[in-house]
Length: 194
Image (cartoon, rainbow, N blue to C red; front, side, top):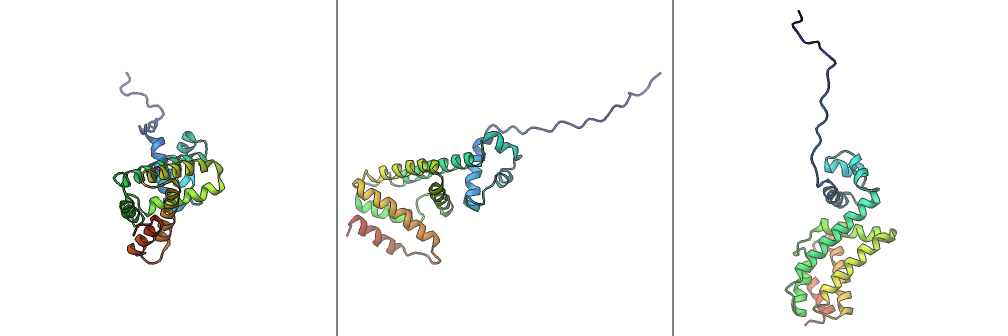
């Protein structure tokens, strides 16, 4: 009589699959963070996968390549920044209010921080070399100018939009803290506000 079961080969349990229906979206968000931290040149599949805590194959499954993922990350970032911009200027009606709003934006009081701007400048630089990304930057610039055109004429809106980007870049790259009053004076001259 047999009293014990016959032992067969031990089976290793199948790996548990993580249920992650939002993985693709999460990878795009993580790519934005990696770009902010390491720049476009330092953004790799491995770095994104490690930051997202996913297998490397997840990136090749969800995206056709690093350029595809980067383009989607930049598109999402530009849309988010455009929404921040729109919200910041929502209640502005006069040139005087615009002066204060632009000064606040340049000095970081608008919902975007230096990391957000770093990604924006990485996008601008990448678009110089990748014409496909120029549509992303052009769409973003059109949206920004449309917001400003509710307050000023199109030529002034274009100038103010460019001024904002330049002043923010100078602020970020400065080794000292730019003075708020100086920024306000510069913007006042462009807006012709006394």
